[in-house]
Every structure is written in structure tokens, then in C-alpha cells.
Length: 375
Image (cartoon, rainbow, N blue to C red; front, side):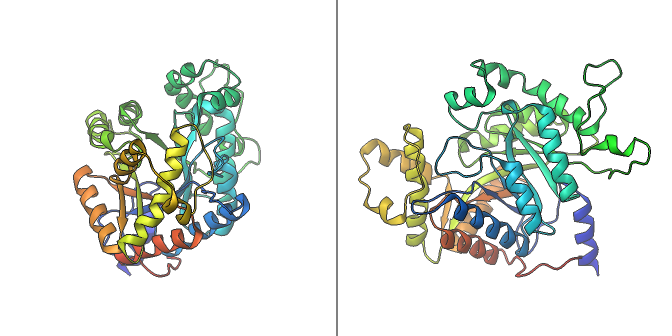
């Protein structure tokens, strides 16, 4: 009975949760709906749906998808659309964006999209926000219909404040947006005959440097750091977040998650074979040749030059991969070094079966439940 009550309590808290099994912190999933060579976008999105259902069944805390654009190997350009689909195929797991790139969109549009998601999946929606474009400069200019890209990033605090007011429907009298309402949203509970849930999406800030860490701390919001592609900045950013944290109506103390690349297979050799596909895809992206995630056979047969080999070694140094025990040991060490309150695992590799199997093995390594039932 105590376990059942603990689970109900966790469900009422949109941010904090107790870890399951032998995991030291809650485990979550970040997915990019990666598209491998020989795979269609439809197949990639079906895999994302399968993965969300697996994550729910095995007791992962939340499942986020990330906004990226103009990348053939990533099918998650529209997080809100994907999340609506996932809401229809899951029941309990929290769903969210990791993240929506706020400067790419009007705050009202995001408030409407995520208000709709909250109506579809009440009490299960996270709105993770970033200030990077999630793409190259030319694509960002096309998205924003302006060449003044730096301005969007600099205005992030103001955009965030505007978005929050739309979500809460609390612009002050006299404000130019005071009579504009994000629907679905709180305004529906204020009109004659209106009934509206008191809940709204839980807002997180995402980052790979100190800017969002500081802002999240000052606003008392949960913070998620992109350790998987900015490992050198992880500890400084989390320290800054904790140092600047001010208690808020959302949190009484800091709560930080970290995104971590992790991949488990039956043995280290097979795990390396799989993660090499994502590393080669990243080389191509960084050198202006974005494409599909290559197959393991293509990655094994690729002739890396010296610079590329150095990149591979550097990239894989921040990926926790190997047997399930090796991955667990690596994640445990990272949690101790960073003091992270939650770990969000991402597995950027080619194949559906290998990716699904990796999450199963990690769940087994931490003794996560094999099936979750409604509390």
C-alpha cells in the first residue's frame, strides 16, 4: 500500500519523482525520431511510438522529443504533432519537448499547442524550452522570416515571460495582449458556463551553457542540461543553476536533469558498432553534410581520416556504451559527479531493434519494473 501511495504522490508532482528499481535517480528518455538509411520517416516515427510505450511499461519518468529542422536523419521537426500522437498511444508517462526552440515560434502559438496537448493528456505534459535554433543559420532565418537571428536569442527572457503569461492567462490590465487568450487555456474557466482544468504544462528550461542555467535558477524553474553534446559545460552550468536558484511557486529547491547518450548491447563490441553509426552521422552534420543515420555496416566500412578519428574518440568519450553493467556503471558515475536529479537517456543509432533493445537492457540493469499498472 505504501508503494501505491508513493506512486500516486509522484503523479501529482509534475517535476519530482522517486526513482524506481535500483536506479539512484529517475530515468527518462529523449528521442529524436532518428531516420536511418533504408528507413522511411513513417517507420522512424513508428519506432518513436514503440519506444514511448516501452518507456511507459518499464517505468521511465518522462518521454521527450526534440525540435530539429532541415536534418534528413531527424524526423522530430514538429514536437507538438508527435506528442499528440504519443498521447493517444500512452496512458501515464509524462510527455514533453526537449525542447521547443522558443525563438522559432510566436509564444502564443506555443501556448495554444501545448494547451491543446494538456487537454489531450491532462497532467502529463512538459514544455521544455530552448533558445537555440535547432538547425543552421539559413534554416533558422527561413523559420523566423528574418535574418536578425541574434535578436531572437537575446529576447529569450522576454519571450519566455510572454509565453508564461499566455499559459496562465494573466496579462495585466492595459497590456496590449490583455484581451488575447491562448485556447485551450484558463480563460475557458472564466466565461459563463465555462469549466477548465486548473492544470497547465510544466515549463522547463533547456541549455548547453550558462545562460539558461542562470535564468532557470533565477526563475525557480526546473533545468535540463544537454550533457550529450556539451559535456565540458555540464558541471559549471549545474553549479550556476544551483547557486542562482530562487524558490518559486513551482519549486522550493533546484531540480536538474541531464541528457546523456547511452547505449547498451549484450557486449561492448556490439554496443560500439551501434554507437559508431550516430557518431558518423554527427561528423557529417558538423561538416555540412547532414544525411540519414548510416547502418552499422556502412559505419564499419567508412575510412575515417585523422581529424575524423579524433572527433570520434572525443565524441564517444561522452557516450556511456557497452554491456548493461558497463552502462550502469558509467551512468552511476556521471550522476555522482554532477549531482543530477534525473537522467534523460538518448540513443542515436541506426536500427529500430537495437535501440529498443538498448532501453530494455538499461531498464533491466536498474531493475525497473517489467510492467507498470495504474496506481
